[in-house]
Structures are given as C-alpha cells and as structure tokens.
Amino acid sequence: MGRVAGFALLSLGLACWPRRDAASRPAIALMAMLTYNSLVTCYLIFIGISGRWVGVLLWPAAAIHGFLTFLLVRAWLKTQHAQDTKG
Image 1 (cartoon, rainbow, N blue to C red):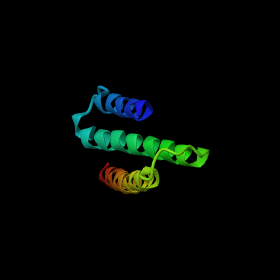
Image 2: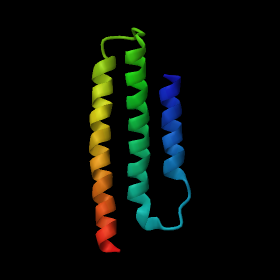
Image 3: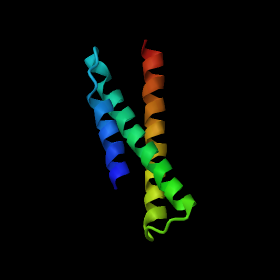
Image 4: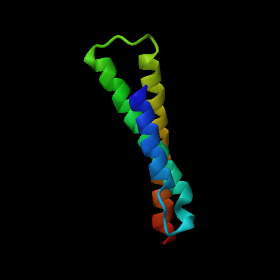
C-alpha cells in the first residue's frame, strides 16, 4: 500500500507542477493519471509474477488498472493529435 500511495504522490506532484501555459492543464492532468495508472499496473503485475500471494483481487485490480492505462493512452494520443493539427 505504501508504494501505491507513493505513486499517487508522484502523480499529484506531476499534476501540480507549475506551468507557464494554462491551456495545457487538461493534458497535464491526463498525463498525471496516466503516470499513476501505468506505475500501479506495472507494480501489481510485478507482485503477481513474483509469486507473493496477496489475495484473489490482485489480478482483477491489475486488469482494471491496465484497462484504464489503455484508455488514458488513447485519450492522450487524441489530445496530442489535436494539438498537432491545431498548431
């Protein structure tokens, strides 16, 4: 739990990092959520592969975080494509 909380704090720090342009705030929040979910997904998969028994909900939690990571990557790519066509 401590490492997952550390991932959350890292992502919160990324989201709150001062930026010059206020227009990119939604993209920054998206990147922070993407960072959190990808780190948690990797960590849960690492725990599952290392053979430690932590409970029956480990793999469903890893799958949910993996799916959320996939959705966030897709949304981030859409925003990057929209910024490329806009500017």
